[in-house]
Length: 260
Image 1 (cartoon, rainbow, N blue to C red):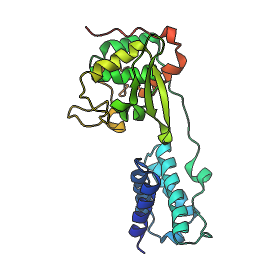
Image 2 (tube, rainbow, N blue to C red; image 1 turned 180 degrees about the vertical axis):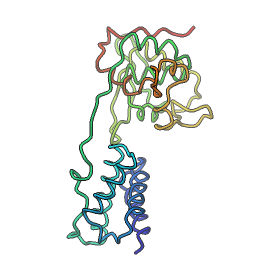
Image 3 (cartoon, rainbow, N blue to C red; image 1 turned 120 degrees about the vertical axis):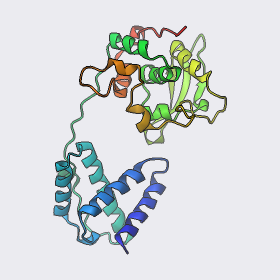
């Protein structure tokens, strides 16, 4: 069987195993990167071939996270080949500790109240304000905000309880998130501009299409970009807004001033 056929079968396997996730796209791309670097038959690939590939990736300036993912993809691929060919004695050439390396894990810093107030003051688009408040007040991840539909807004706030949102998080795990009345008012202002329909996404782009994680989470709103420190190209990262929800007590949250 040709090597490309093995990669195609691996892609189908990943699509069955991880539906609705990017795993198949990323892992297949990683395996093809290795296939271009190492022309050996899969059965002849050894430990030192992986050493050479990892060294090549690092010399090319790939980030530690990218190298780690590519090593994970190759480990999964060689496990798949051994099982697919019923050759369970086929030793996997990937040694995760040896090849993936140890990753630094800096925590995102939380924003001060003054920074939050300043950021909130320059975000004037209804969609961006709703997006911002869900990450800041409810602690949602970028992917969780992107996947929200109208049906996930379960109930508005009442005199005795906050609003309730259904959130689909990592591993397709669902949870219910509470949202204060003032934060819900910001979300409701955006929903009032959106057409009704339970299955419709809460957030769309200028063409009315659903947003993507990469397209939205890595780009600040144009007005918010004014807050970038000199030399900083990213603005305030989404993780910083999300981190703030865990470090700021509700009574200390800055006021969400509405737009007149």
